[in-house]
Length: 348
Image (tube, helix red, strand yellow):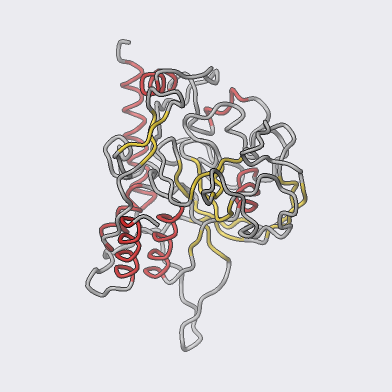
């Protein structure tokens, strides 16, 4: 581990248990959706294959237990509470769009740089799998709940929401803009300007150039927003290059992990604002390093087991409420829609 990351880890551990750094008066607990368990066919034979990257085969049957999943991706404001309460430092290295051969470069930007955090209700990015775990440990300690990342199987089961089509809403990629922030007519000019090149955009318009406020698009059949697009979502599982011998019970797969260029890797799902029709599929798999940070784009969503908590006297501990989060989010969404309308109306 690099010296700076080691020092950051020590600081985070101290802060999480320090009485000197108090939690905010009202911790933003995420609005959660209860996902009823069931059995589904995980994976797809329609996705491209690359020997160095995780495939979505073989298709296999998985039975998932009931659990809770956050209605929205974790936001800048939620993550900011954690940083301000604990002094946690993520580091200032983050992959970003750039005019290079790959279209990206690693730069000195972070999760709270203006370009990455246009509002408190945009999804947080430029956070690593390790950063996400530090946040979830703090949030659990402040709310009395046991928050975690979802397993890859839980994530795909929830993203599909009972569907067996290419996308949760059907097979037509032109419908993606009603349900997700993807690489479309709005995003192409902005991404081309930053990266110096881009591919063919999906023939629709979602109104967003890069990332946007969470929950702007239609939820899937189970009430979850942005499972596709906006930012990719880190899951608990480490990288495996196929589903051979994958768990059939929906738990995270954390043994026998495959590396990439000798680095430990984890899985992220759901595509992002730069994803086309293939990358926006709920079956498509991506990978990232455990300490990798990216604005192109990786964030995370919170999961929770359906287990009741009791105090020492045996009384049920009530779950913390989400407070004014959704009321404030609704205002942020209205402001973002107004901004998009002005942008589209302006002369080109």
